[in-house]
Image 1: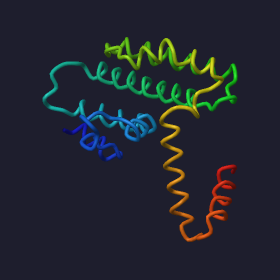
Image 2: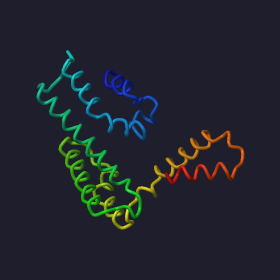
Image 3: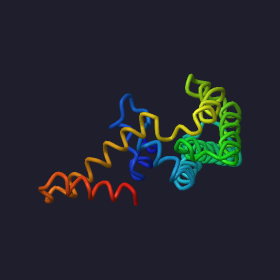
Length: 175
């Protein structure tokens, strides 16, 4: 319960997620703020009077390893979001390094290897290379476009002339 409070304080509400899993915006926030969140969780465990196992050093090590895992995932996803025809050999190599690092950390921590881990490990970078980038053809990119379009429509709601409103949105999109 205390860990859920730490997450909620940082903008991640597991109760609002389907099945209590951290997905979408919650996962992005966790990767973005992982150092502060994990540090706070580690301190909470170190202060707990009901600790079952683990020395202080072991607990700190697990926290550091989770931080590295989340930072590696963040780097991997950032590289994977490279739009088509913007992919460079350097980005491909960086994507592979992040992928290999987070997969190794998953195994080290004894986490179960899911279908998503398998796809990341054996197919994602190859797809990225074959398509010269995949960042603009994924489902999340399409959803983001819908959200951006809705924001633009709300912001430009006072512009009554359809052609003028679409011209403004187009210019903003180019920027």
